Amino acid sequence: MFIAAIDIGGTKIKYGVVDDEGSISSQGSIQTHPKRGASDILMRIAEVITTMAKAYPLVGIGISATGQVDFYQGIISYATDLIPNWIGTNIRGYFEGKLNLPVVVENDVNCIAIAEHWQGSAIGEDSFICIALGTGIGGGIFNQGELYRGDNYGAGEFGHIKIVQNGRQCRCGDYGCYEAHASTDALISRAKVLAKLDNIDGETIFQRERNGDVLYKELVEEWIGFIADGLKSIVVSFNPKLIIIGGGVSAQGDYLLHRIEENLHQKLMPSFKKNLILKMASAGNDSGLLGAAYLLLRNLEGK
Ligand code: BMX
Ligand code: ZN
Image (cartoon, rainbow, N blue to C red; front, side, top):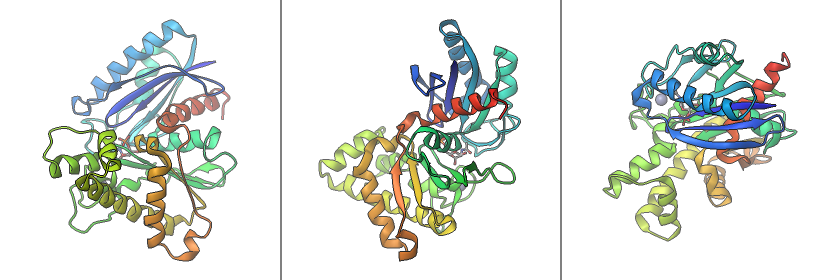
C-alpha cells in the first residue's frame, strides 16, 4: 500500500510516498513560503500529490501540519500568525474534495511522536515526551500508549512556555516564549544579528562552532541553555522517563544531545534526572512523514 505523506513545517514542506512498512520513496521538499498564506500552500501540495498519484496507486493522504490540529475533522483549530489564514483551514476537506482519497491530518510533532513510537526511539515505551526544534517548537505527549491531545488539541504546545521575562517577541503575541529563544529559527536570527549577516543556516552555525569560532561558541552555548530551561519545565510537569528531540537539529546527533543533557542535569533535582533518558528522533527529519502515514493506515483499518 502506498500513502502520500506530507509534512508542512514553517520553513519547508517535505513529502514522500510511504508504504505500510514505513519505507519512504520519491522524497523531496519545497519551501513553505508561509507568508503567501494557506491557499497557496494547499495548492502547491495538491500539485505534488497529483504527480505522486501518477506514479503510485495511492490509498490515501497523511498530513503532518504545523499548528494545533483538530485531528477528528482535519482542521487547523488554532495557530500562531506564522501562516496567514491558517486558523480554520479545512485541510482534510480540501484534499478529499480535490483528490478523492481518504485524508488524515495531525499536528507535526504529534506525528513525530507517533512515528517514533511505531518504529523509532520510543518503540516499546508507552509514556514519553517528544519535542521538535524547528521554525517553532512543538511537542507530543504519549501517555500509556495513547497520544494526549488536550481539550482543544493544544496539548504539548511547548513552544509557548514562557522562559524569559520581557524576552523576545513570539508569533503567538506574547514575549519570552520558549520557541522565541530556543527554536532553530531563534538560533539563526540571533546569529544574523551578532555576526551581522544577511543569511546563514543552522548547519553553518554548528560547523563554525565546532571549528572553535568564539562568537558561534557563545551563541550555541546560550541557545543550549534556553533549550534546557524549557526542557526543565517539561520534565517537572510530566516527570518522563524518555524525551525524544526531533526537527532539523536531530541531524547534529550525540554531539548536541550530550550538551543539552549536561545543561539540563545542572538544573534538575536528582529525583527527576535519575532515570531520565534523552534521545534524538531516530528517523530524524523524516519522522513527520512516517507518523502521518501511520495515522492514515490506522484510519483505513477503522481505528
Ligand atoms: C509552533 C506551532 C506548533 C508547531 C510548532 C513546530 C503554529 C503554526 N505552530 O509552536 O503547532 O508544532 O510550532 O512547528 O502555531 P514548525 O513550524 O517548527 O514545524
Ligand atoms: Zn509564544
